[in-house]
Amino acid sequence: MIEVVKPGFYSTIQDLGRIAYHDYGVPYSGAMDEQSAKIANALLGNNENNAVLEITMTGPTLKFIKTTAICITGADLSPKLNGNAVSLNKRYTIKPDDILSFGKLNYGFRAYLGVCGGFQTEKVMGSRSMYKNVTEQFITQKGELLPIKDLNTNAATSNASIKIDKTHFNTKSLPVYKGPEFDNLSKTQQKQLLNKTFTVSKDNNRMAYQLEDAIENNLKPIITSLVQPGTVQLPPSGKLIVLMSDGQTAGGYPRVLQLSDSARYSLAQKKTGDTFTFNMSE
Image (cartoon, rainbow, N blue to C red; front, side, top):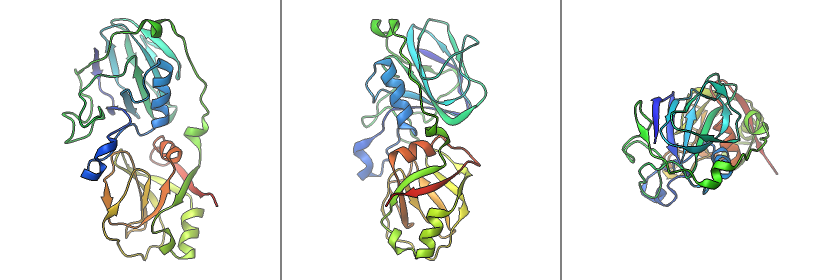
């Protein structure tokens, strides 16, 4: 078990999501930055779909009840083990009563804590990913005990680590593809969309990122159609909305762009005020 002494700003258990239920209106959920979550599991020798703790902006304080191995990836939130700084993207053996805490946000926005064997919280519809009205809880709570497995012997003796390319966190260019309604835009609108620098607004969360900067929009709403994480919608205001992991499964705004998976993971590491452009390869 791991005791949640302080839950942090927004900490949730996530795996790779509910893949088979989108047709029934259930969002995929899953780790916002899937790349970082997979790295944590790989360094621990876990299955890539093992559940991790997704930590947003401000980290929790956690007390370990049993021996395990951990790895922290993604954003740098100045993690400390028993008050001593620990490195990202490196496996550590943890003993009972060890305390993991976090401090200043240095880069990125979401960190991932992996444990040996993955977190063993309730599985609903084939996934442990927390989501309101699907799982019993949608964020971790103070005093909660998070179940984990006993430490695997091989994990205890490994000191695996990896060096990460910071481009994933600081890139200003997000690869995109044409959305279904892209060609309904005028040439002027298309140029605006692909040449403008956009700013992440304060309205950003696991459901969607709204962007500050509006573009000209005279498109009519569409018949409610399928959308997915990474879909870029153009509402009447002209302020783009990028759907993220907990985004709805259908919508009536024109779908003008679709982020690549890598672009969506990079966007998940951006916070209010960060800027970027869309980059469409010919």
